[in-house]
Length: 223
Image (cartoon, rainbow, N blue to C red; front, side, top):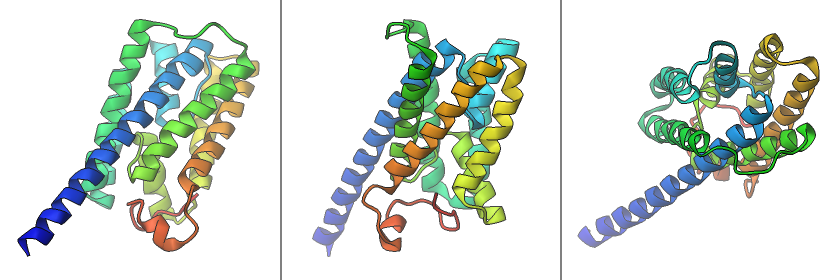
């Protein structure tokens, strides 16, 4: 009996270590893409990421601090609806993104300047891969994902629909600080990131049992 319990503990520890490693990888990719492709090219993103970039460009707010405050508030709401594991993993992902973004911002640009279209495509891919990896672990990569999950659970709307609505609102507000041409590139980035998240999240999941293994909270509609 003791041996079986130890075996389960070892498996749990290995799973937890794997989850933490994936969250760190996802946060790194996400922070790298948001700074090097989005912020440096005035390309915004929907959800909380878009709101923090909006606050940065209009009021000069620190992205890491503003993002952390918004994320924590939304993740507390997520905890009440989805439970402890979701909350703990999501807080780790949110803090990881904020710290890593601050590091990338301190270091400065790591890539040569490129065109807006290339930045939109690469930024969308980076955000999509980073968020997608963390969603596969079973957590929100930030407050925007938590918000989407909450709205999906309350309204029964699909996640894809919720993302479209929330991202659209933020992008419309972004017209106040970015030209219409740049807004087009932001839309391209959002569309690519959404499709990439859908692809990464759906890898290898062909039935309901496999979806449940991702630890995505019950009641949330798959994209």
